Length: 338
Image (tube, rainbow, N blue to C red; front, top):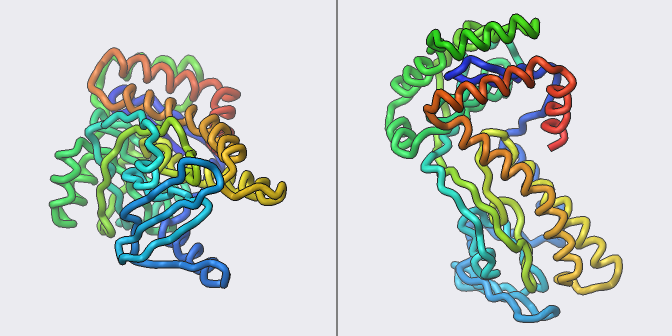
């Protein structure tokens, strides 16, 4: 993986395997397949919750009203209903928020030629936000492009040809000579680190684009993940900028922790919505999530701006980390285990 800053031409280049990328639709298809094999699971499609009534004490049922007019009663509801969660609203928990005034533009791209660096992910930080290229196979990669809200809507309105021209032009733009770049070049020479070869990345060209979509970006963290009869997971509990690619991983971590606690609840003969175990889930998940949320928020503030002073500071930071192998290995190990 190669990460670099367009303002300072500073970089970090990670060697070896950091992570694997799974297409969202394949994950969904796999889950549907598992559900279809379990006769104890009732799956309802094309319905959503319109009202969630939580109990005021432990042991009472949760009542859900659906948009098809039917109702469901349960010991516990798990809110996995995204950033506009109705279950979270029912918990009356306060949520800390920050609006980045940005959208994430996602798409699948096809290389004009087979990628010479198959398996390498690239992320370029622009003043408007990062643009990430994540390999899928020999001919395709996934695009995650952070843009100001108005730009994202403008690019979504372009036809495929104009969109690809805009994308390829931005990717091929070489950093302009500057004092910051010269300082970084001298630092690379001192640390005996090979400078980033921009022509390698700039040489990538795309001639097809599929499945463009945009979604608003922001920071969000719910103060309480649980209440009587309810537990929140994923985007319903926390919202993170995609620049570190941790959103889904944090959600999967919530699922693992909550599943373990529910198993413990049943093993000990307690009611499924026992607040003792739900509070343990909340504590463990929040400890796991707060660090990445804060780190990603600070990176967004540090990189998504035009400040020359911040460009110099972050450029030095990137090059120091890249030049000190034990530190870089530590970061790589943490990223791989996130």
